[in-house]
Amino acid sequence: MRELTVKDAINEALMQVMEADPSVIMMGEDIAGGAGRDDQGGLDAWGGPFGVTQGLVTRFGRERIRDTTIAEAGFFGAAVGAAMTGLRPIVELMYVDFVGVCYDQLLNQAAKMRYMFGGKQKVPMVVRTVVGAGFRAAAEHSQALYPLYTHVPGLKTVAPTTPADAKGLLISAIQDDDPVIFFEHKRLYMTKGDVPENPTPIPLGKASIPRSGKDITVVAVQRMVNFSLEAARLLDIEGIQAEVIDPRTYSPLDEDTILESVAKTGYLIIVDESYPRCGLAADISSIVAEKGFDYLKGAIRKVTPPHTPVPFSPPMEDFYLPSPQKIADAVRGLLGAR
Image (cartoon, rainbow, N blue to C red):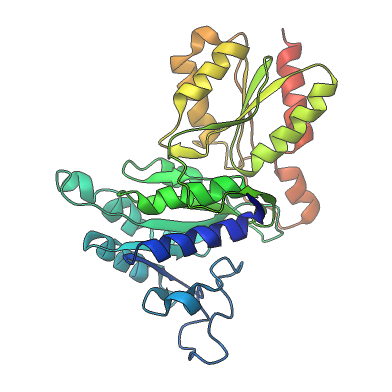
């Protein structure tokens, strides 16, 4: 075990998988050194907007690490075709907010091919994309659009929190025979944690429980896991033991772990950075209400942003996001209703 950042853990996963499997390629804007640059000096200058893919083109060359033009519809379509004909492409959508220009390729092509061809056609591709507010990047570069993808049957969706999960889940995503959307939160890139050196996959569809407790279940999405753990530490001082669950993948979703926790605690709060209408918090709420209603001792509560675009103003953006204090207050309010 070594301590790595989320960014470096993702880079290591990409490096190890590409070394082991020559069918894995990458496509995206500026993931090498910028399209059109020669191999002298400018090569590998950027590695994407957050430097996640630095070093890969130097090792694997421009045939496997391909800079693209700013034309997501085109290179996403190329990735679907590559996946259908024997490659395992990893395609980078620079920010999840840009999904509108390539959603047809995902919604109507990648997601449906296996179904429409009776299970005979695989589309083993991974979409890496950046999500999340708190970076002062305004409304068009700060959204958490996990629900747009989770809603679509045929797409698998993954949102890791820790460096170890980022590495293990990305390896599983690349090895999967279905299209996987892999969300990377920009505010988690530099967080650190222990990461195994070996390329050890973490199965998709299995939640983790970073904190056990007996009084209330808190299901949190990606960065909100860290906020929920901080809230749990605040509540612990007051004698409230919160159990924090990180689903890690949302399609497939580990319903059993969530329901087992609610059966133990009797109370549920979901913390989600995506919009409240038709979001992941709403989805998980409905699942528990339908399948675990008899376990509940009180109403299900959601802690989400308001149904507005992400503000650019730093004080407004901070107010917009869920926070450890808001989560702790929601727990106190729910348990106080006992």
